[in-house]
Amino acid sequence: MRNMMRTIMAVGVACMLLCSCASLNNRSLKEKDTIIFLGDSITQEGVRSDGYVTLTSQAITKAYPDLNIRVIGAGISGHKVPNCQKRLDRDVLQKKPTIVLIYIGINDVWWWNGRWGKGTTKEDFESGLYDMIKRIKAVEARVILCTPTVIGEKTDGTNEFDKMLEEYSDISRKVAKKTGSQLLDLRKAFMAYLKEHNTDNVAKGILTRDTVHLSKIGNIFLSGLVLDVLNVPSAD
Image (cartoon, rainbow, N blue to C red):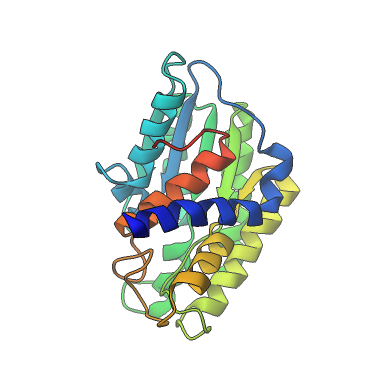
């Protein structure tokens, strides 16, 4: 319980760090909104009973029980930006979204480890984000673009992919700014939390269970960040 309370308090601090969201953060949800979470295995797991998508959906229902808001998880394990481009029509646009949260980028970086194929070049990552956002905005849906989070939780810069994650996060920040999309800077928020709570500089076990996929606390933390940008109070 003590750890959970610290996490909830940390969400508030992290949200204050996400100043890039401030100008858009007061937009409230409306009746019959359809919110789609597009991503990889982190989002695929997010629809589990304790996952961040489910926690977000529960909080929305509690806060706005009469608005009939629909929340859909569209995460597939191993997917990168090019995969999401290919299935955008089927998994997102055909469902007539009003809000689309894009949380992608971990596999685009991680797969450069040489074990599973190839990652996504910076050029293809950037052009793919522009393509998806253009198509989403063409159906007049609001876009929330997330930066990739972590591949390893050490805070001293010694995780193998720290430098590359920062570079790809910078691309997401640039794309959000140039397209007028809402930025949810998860990388910044996760690292701020870890700098405070990962005092032993461990590689996993704080916000993730395996350096990438979210722990129970990680799901709570991420859900709180999403609820903040949606202007929804967290469920008790």
